[in-house]
Length: 234
Ligand SMILES: [Zn+2]
Image 1 (cartoon, helix red, strand yellow):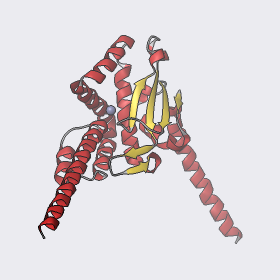
Image 2: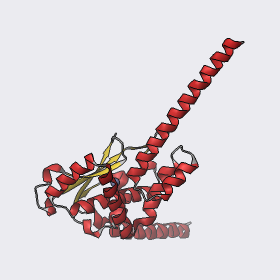
Image 3: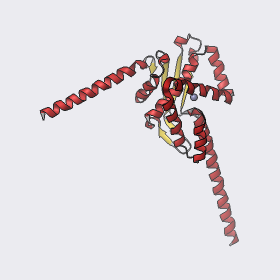
């Protein structure tokens, strides 16, 4: 019995040791970051791919509802006039992953997908870091008015993430969105072939799902009308 206890103690000490090594390795990326406790491991893992952002001020914020997206990276407006060193960013994260037919708590999506998604947002921040305050204000304006510019900015974010070795995570995020969309396989295959960021995939998937829903409703109405007219006939 005693031997058994020693053995258990030995195992748990070993476990603690490797845990603390992992934590020590990754905790260095927590500098100047505010991260909700439940997301800490995945956020720090994504940050470890971006040594350039080691001291950058980033606050990760869980939000009950973000219009039309799951995550968004933004500079904090009031810090735009400061020097780059004192600029702050935030990454808003929706508490739910939502499509038309799917809804699940964000902390229940697989780690790989979450890391990929955050990695994409960090790609946006790295892109912002290369811009001056006035360039960022102009960027914000163009992002709102030009869909072509949105696509361009999204591609840059993904490219930066892939360049830093996050390719498999970015692909996992894309696959996850497609796997949770109730769309014909042909649609999914088409989207999967294109080089698109999570935001754009999400937008396309939602549009297609809405279209499919509308088609189903129209079909149901037609069927109902047909039944009514047949009933009249007999
Ligand atoms: Zn994006």
